[in-house]
Image (tube, rainbow, N blue to C red):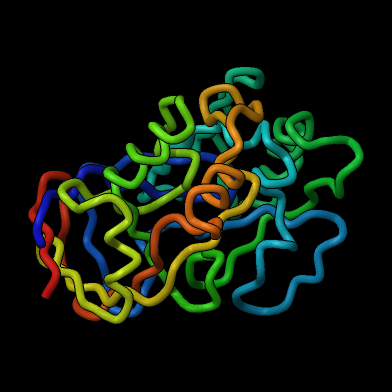
Length: 248
């Protein structure tokens, strides 16, 4: 089975914006470069050194308005620019303590007042993905199209906050790839496990409003709430939108 890489997307600050890329170099044993490099801890978080689970962070499942953020990272300076339809644009350095108050003032109105509020930006030396291993998420445009038809609405891929979107597979075929290897451009990945989804996928990423019961649709059609698979990079190399992919 072969096809083309349709989209590369990273999320420099977990739960706070997405950024499409034309190309990137994957590194063995690592997440997509700069993906979930930072995360926004809330006031009830119990942060440990290194990777931490998502319950410690502000995210779209609990604060739907966050889903409408777009982002842009300047890798040379470390400056992130976020934009939201209701909050305008802000540029700041997530590692700079002096920039934190300005970021918190910008983002707090996007968090429900009855939820734990954001207080700190943290990093772990690896991507703060939802898996406890350094993963890259692989998703299928055919599966997205099938779910869209089942729901009677055009679903944006950004609902699923994926990294690599593949054209050319049969719908839902990716669930049968667990344990297999996938070559994309100059990199090779091993497919590890299915991704169980959360309420963030019910949010329209253009508006930040709940619009479509993706979880219910998946459960009704298939008896689960899975979409996409986690992979690990076993051979690093460059990849670009339009590259051929193949199972090997």
